[in-house]
Each structure stands twice: as structure tokens, then as C-alpha cells.
Length: 191
Image 1 (cartoon, one colour):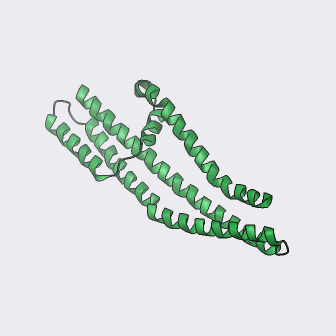
Image 2 (cartoon, rainbow, N blue to C red):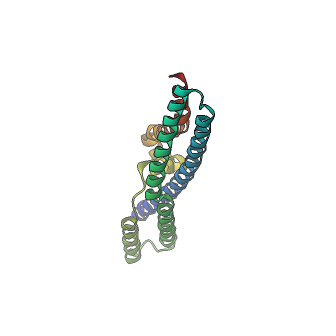
Image 3 (cartoon, one colour):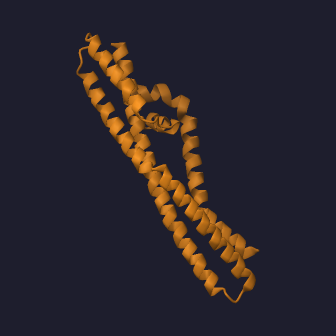
């Protein structure tokens, strides 16, 4: 009975962590698509400002340089992100956690004395782990954060700080990405 509960917890934890991984990758893809649009719009605005400030020689050069740097950065980021294939990885996680859900159902309906069926479920679980790239630690932290009851109580204390640190780090990183072009523009205006 205890072995089955341990296996059930492992399958559930992996499945929910993969669900969180899928959400994280979809959110990441959406964020970077929005950032690409944002940077493209700012590059266009800075290009227009360069044309409008044609009379001010020094300001024009700085703004032109900023526009060129943003265009190059945008190109590099777009090429890099296209290579990451976040949505493709998210679909792989979805397929994997759907299979894990089936295993959970199978385990719930197997007789606890049927060791052969339990062994097959365990082997299928190992195959599913092997067939997909692993989620990152943050996905597990999010699983514990979103859980309740005994599962949450046993694990939350050990991951609480790590979870909030990851949330803060992601927020700060996204904020810096959003603020960077505006900060560069303000620096160009001051020099």
C-alpha cells in the first residue's frame, strides 16, 4: 500500500510539474513575442526621432547608434528565440503529462496485490520520464506552491525561499528587458 502511495505521489508530482513547465514555456513564448513587438515599435519610434532630429547633429548620431544597436539586438533575439522552440517543447510536455495522467488512472484502479500490474505501471512511468526532457526546478517549486494538504505541508518549508526567489528573479529580469531600451534612450539624451 505504501509503495503504491509513493508511486502515485511520484507520478502526480511529475505530471503537475510538467503541467507547470508547459505553462511556463507558453508564457515565456508569449512574453518574448510581446517583447519582439515592443522592441520593434521602439526601434521604429527611435528611427522616426532620428529623422525628426536631423538638425541636431550630436543627438542624431546618438539616436542613430541606439537605433542600429536595437535593430541588431532585435535580430539576434529573434533568431535565438526561434531556435528555442518553446511551443514545441510545451506540446511535448502536454503529451507527456497526458500519458502520466493515464498512469495515475491505471494505478488507482489496480489491485494493490497485483504486483505485476504495478510493476508495469512503474516501468511505463520510467519510460515516460526517459521520453521527455525534464522540467526545471522552478516547475517543481510551483507544483508544491500550488498543492495543498499533506503534500504541501511536507514539502513547502524546504522550497518556499527557492520558489519566491525564482518568482522575484523572473520579475526583475522581465522588468529589465522592458525598461532597457527606454533607459538607453534617456542615457543618449543626457550625453
